[in-house]
View (cartoon, one colour):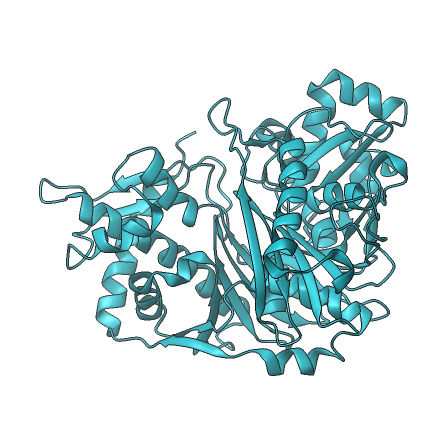
Length: 504
């Protein structure tokens, strides 16, 4: 068995290809950013052709950097931004329009109508999700209702829908020449269309939204040696390889962090911020604003489920400070700027740019900077921007505690993602949570999780216990503040959150 596994990580801002060895160590990495297309307030799009072009390019670059060929890989895994969705023609392979990104709020009127008819939780007992613009199903309905070519394509049986994993799988396995139209349970669960019990598209919900099941991909376990098909020899790998594992990015990070046991949790700090808490084989519906989602499913086994807290803007808030305000030249500059002041100066930034996600689920919220005085400067704003991610994570942790009526003691939290390199943020996170924050040796846990799933499917690793032995600590941040400090800052944050509500 070859000792290498590849992983395509199609994220919100970039597409990467990484190669790992059997110890989970990175052999090579290649990355290309893609355009963020914002044609009006609240709308976010991606060009799927550009993303497929970049995927091909990073696969070639990653293999070249490692001095390997596609045939040297045992398998390839795919992980992706989850709720972003597109439609394309099955015969030509051409998208009908740009992909609608998970952050996009264009389906707000559709969601408002669904809520008026049946309440925000009308589908929660089947899907584990509230009705919200975040999820793919209402976006698909918007595409069908507003783009005539898509409506015609659906009527003629030519249109295919899928999240970004499905788009890449279809192209990697042949595209119009016999590509596999498939997704895994974790991505399917984020559409608001999949039944958590049956792991199938729910006929009643499809009927409400008017979405034909034949236009949707087959739902496959996350770890499956045959379910996603084989790459084409004339494709970017130049080899026939099994696509052995597919996971939505946050579930992939949970898998890469080896949080396989009920009660284990991880938090990923990327474009958004996502905390997943493993609940085992039990489907646990939330009454405190959390999402219920499959964590992963291994072929032939029951799925493992999780509770999730989703935050729309984390690293994206830093990018906003860089690109829209011009206060820093690079995202990494924010830590030094924040360190020019001793504290936030009573300034709070709540990034409700597209409403508030968990645990609030308020589409009417909009972002605010609160607590400004003449004393405040750009250092205070930089600190407030970093602290916003930690405060939002605190809100999620508190919701998990409420869910289990205090029966969960968050003494530590595994973290990953690009923002974990920011030591000021990680220390503040430990302080505001009053918990240890633990960063693993391999911080690229999203791509690692996809590689683990793919390698597990074809026998590179014997099982979950072998994967757990690969995990190692890079650094640990311990809380250094007292309860009065936490209570004071948390109260300020909660006041600021209230100022965002009822704006739209």
